Image 1: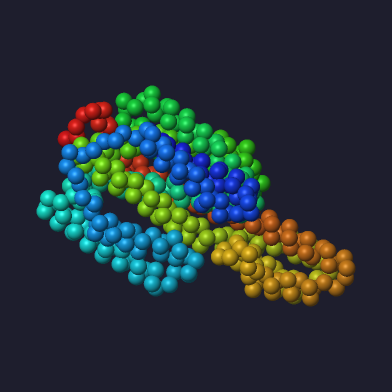
Image 2: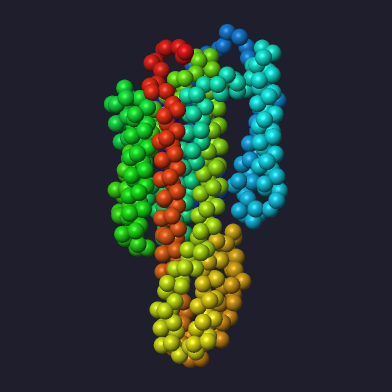
Length: 419
């Protein structure tokens, strides 16, 4: 049940977060999404004290503090530049940090091997990586969790910024996905005997659902609404439920019983690392394409805008300047790191617009024409970029499907020892 619960909570998290941000309890705004962890963490502690068994190992293992520090440093050197690199315009030090993370991971691996040979308790059991099923599961998990978290990020960006949804409404759009996951989990329980094939079928169904989202955006365009997205998101959720339900059991089927603790902890770390990769890679691609996508959408509407400006008695030379200003402003506004700041291109657009106003009638018609064009281009540009990202997501799901052949065919029977 660990995989399904983890996947469902990942999808439901944005709904809770959207509600908390919109509610603005005690004037905390977005900070409540962190404060909510205090009561949830307290409930988890009480639940652990009440329900978790008080099992003890026959031998008292010693905490691998150096290994813990090494792997934490390696993860920091990798994840920080991935997540923050775009904000700092990818300076040289971000790439130096990522290169250094590889060296630290190598030192960590050597240290763990040495610790294991000396009969000490390693943080990660080195023998795990000699098992094809586990190593393949790690790579598959890295790709899949990158896909899942990256898709959720860009889809929420699309609904909130591109379609103008509130955080709560954007979260509620994901309800069909959550419901689909529950359905997928239920189906998986009934066909568990098919093992790896269930996971592979889930990958195919999820890819079809993502294609359905692409088809919906392609057919409906920038006016797409939550109800139109419901069928494809439901199918996506069903596929994800089928994929997640058997995943951890199948991966852990290839490890020995005494390696299970280390293996499950490593897979959880891979999940977090994959999420960071997805946010960094798909988020960077999304914003990298967004400026050009919105600029292209303004170009597509330039003739209509010129017609409106002509009706407002704006000279042709001034029209060219205003259209070029709007193109740059819309692009800069969409990709701005600080949404509250006014880009220089938008300030220039405002200046040129004021100089073009010669009558009181033009003073109302010109801003209205610019607002209508910018709004339409914004939605259309976000939609076209989102469609491109959906192809990338489906490509990553295809890679997930291929990697699944590295996994064992079936999960280990309950109570059986690994071989």
